[in-house]
Image 1 (cartoon, rainbow, N blue to C red):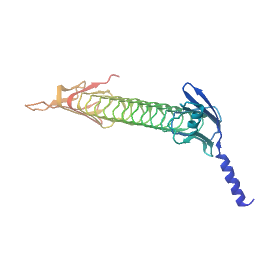
Image 2 (cartoon, rainbow, N blue to C red):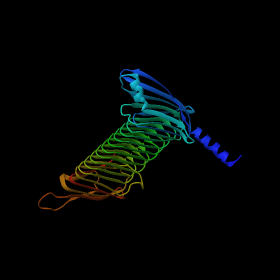
Image 3 (cartoon, rainbow, N blue to C red):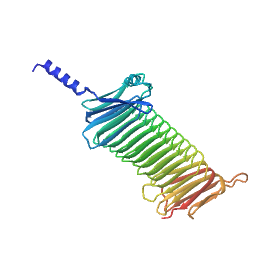
Image 4 (tube, one colour):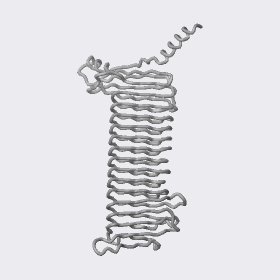
Length: 376
């Protein structure tokens, strides 16, 4: 066969493979709206990509070998003829390429039209990408990776086997169970994550962060609170002014502009700093995990719980003591005060507990420091 004829056949085959499917549609009236329902089926591939100018997207994985979709276009108009004109400005394009299925809306001047996407795909889909300029996004039951972006709506992803990357201009983000890494950000909403098999990176400009379990974490909010149930590795958490509460973590670095800090069962080194709140730290037992640590606040009390089988060297100071300034359950900790004749007398504490070990620096400008024996 001549080479030029082979090339023509190849081009025709590629064109037919990527040819847009003609979805079925019907128009009906519901209440004060005209609705065009668009349905279709596409051959499944490795990937599924959905993009729209406006409206929510929901995608569900299941036991099927095709991609099926139902899309509703909504508009308010005085007649069916006027509704058809408006609905026709925004059309649905659906086709399959060698990489997978693509579904998108295209058109101009569509500010009056609202769309919603309901899509069902094979659960073993390797990659799903969802994008809308304004609307909620949700995905469930996908074994591969998921990427979701919305200009301002909420995002909810659950039962995802691979990694997740999600961003919203300002909506809440809710993540259920994820097998891989999680990377999410929002312009101001709350972020809630149940569990991740890998690293968690979460950022909000001002919302609360509620995190379940993960291997390592990097968490940041412009002003909301942060709460973590469990982090098996290192964690870095910061807030512009909210409270931070961590439980059962490895090494931790924590900072807030003005809220309180509470860290329970920290196994590695701990660095905690607040611009004006109390600090409570509960150190966990274990040899070799704990490293040099520092707790510091300019205005607030600090309480440290230390187990009997954790060796540590204490260096503590209170510049403007409240009452005695420093108290301790450990007699081997030497507590002294400066000999200033006038003004407040600084309080200091120094000593080796349980045979000594890494150094724990504790400092408050105006407050009280207490070292307590952790009950077994």
